[in-house]
Amino acid sequence: MREGMRSVMLMTTYECQLRCSYCRVRLGARRMDARTAARGVDLLLSSRAPRLLLNFFGGEPLLAWDLVRAAAERARAGRAGRELTVNLTTNGLLLDEEKIAFLSGAGGRVHLSLDGPHEANRARLAGGRTRAQGAMEAALRRLNASRVPYHANAVATPARAAAFDADLLALEDLGARRIQFGYQVGTLWGDAARRDLLAALDRYEARGGAELVNRVSDSEPVMLKNEILVDADGALYWDGAVFLEAALPRLRETLRLGHLDDAPDVDALEPEPRKCLERLLAAYPPGSGGARIILDNIKTGLALQRRWPGRSLAAGRA
Ligand code: SF4
Image (tube, rainbow, N blue to C red):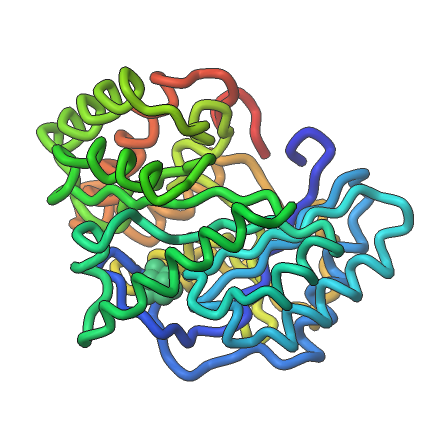
């Protein structure tokens, strides 16, 4: 348990309006039903932890807004005096005033997948959907005008690593005050792109003024992150099973923890990162292409962990 916190992530839908080039989720028409969402919330509430985190993920969770809203209300009603945070990861296209007002009253916070200016987003807004950029920037303005805590997310890819400082500065220019960056996983980086990324971060830290959430994050290496995910059909996984599926499909079987029907003890489900690595390498044995990607991505995560060593998975995150 992380500092007395238990978290559960609901995979609300596999639908999304976008097709980001770095996305490793197998998008499609699957969606969680209300009963499964309620049972996922109850799984979180069954924890003995004093602090609870309910994460809504996708796909794009705002395409399933009724489900998100009902699940958040259920969690608030059942939290029994415990601290509850509701986190929504969204591309922002449907983030209007009504939803922001609800989140403001529900202890919500937003992880806005914005990436940066139009140039940075061009690759991910496939299918002639570049109009989406304006809607995403409007969502950022609404969040800035609200009391909902948020951070804007940017994703570094090997191809854009050398220019990533420009993407972060462009996010600031759009008005982002708190930024969290991720790096594309499920793809080979290699030492040269890793060095480019670190050099770009050096340049950004020398010039940038936004709060960089990664400096105090405990989430590296993200390949060994083992948050409990409730899939749309009620199956339980460590989250990498779903977020790497397009690149590493065997992880779904290997990282399965059970099903809501098994009435699991949620506090017993989240094991050490070492166990997560064992399962990853059971699916993709050393020497295989999959193992090369996994170990390469862990190397990137460890490089970032060394850069900001405040808190780390290796220091005991569980
Ligand atoms: S990364 Fe997020 S916004 Fe982009 S296609 Fe995947 S689910 Fe949609």
